[in-house]
Image (cartoon, rainbow, N blue to C red):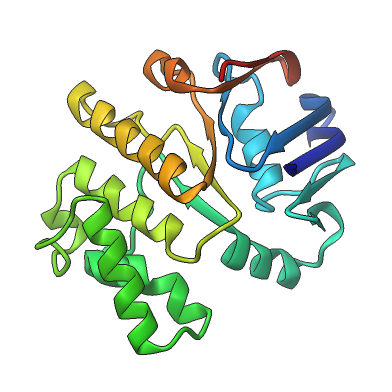
Amino acid sequence: MAIIRTENLSRVYRENSIEVKALTDVNLQIQRGDFAVLAGPSGSGKTTLLNMLGALDRPTSGRAWLDGHEITSLSKMDRSRLRRDHIGFIFQFYNLIPVLTAYENAEFVLLLQGVSHHDRETKVSELLKKVGLSGLEHRKPHELSGGQQQRVAIARALASSPSVVLADEPTANLDSQTEQGLLDLMEQLNRDLGTTFLFSSHDPEVIDRARRLIVLRDGVVVSDTRRD
């Protein structure tokens, strides 16, 4: 069953008289439970496509659906709710709130959702244990290594039990050993929880792990290979 679907999705950026086609007629389906990677060189459209699917930006034309919701026609407020309740994000630079602890960063989306204190505590404690951060719950981002910060970001992304996790170059700033550990962790979470992961990356290590590899070049999907 497709959790993400696009229909002729296109994005054109215009600056003065210059027109740049970032995406052109992308037709794509991501199945529930996929561990998929959008690959391609810089400027190929990976991040632009991820932003469209994450309701962070609107396409110039075409449509996209996420978990049955047509995201391209939603209002700004409805897109915000969709992101909060259905999408987990993992960014290259972690995007943690610096004044909050690891626990508070992971808990934040549950506060926005109005989840009870008891349920928040149970969920966040379980997630931080699952990502290997037991004992570090009260440390703030500057007190954690890059790999530990990204583990907090993974816990935060999973806290709302999202339909899909979108990860934009999540290992780009990590050493190879930390990268391997985080990829192992995300594969395990994909298997154990059935969480759908969609990465954008040009990192060979990430690409090697993909069970579904979608290659973009100049805003066009040039290959789509399932490697289960």
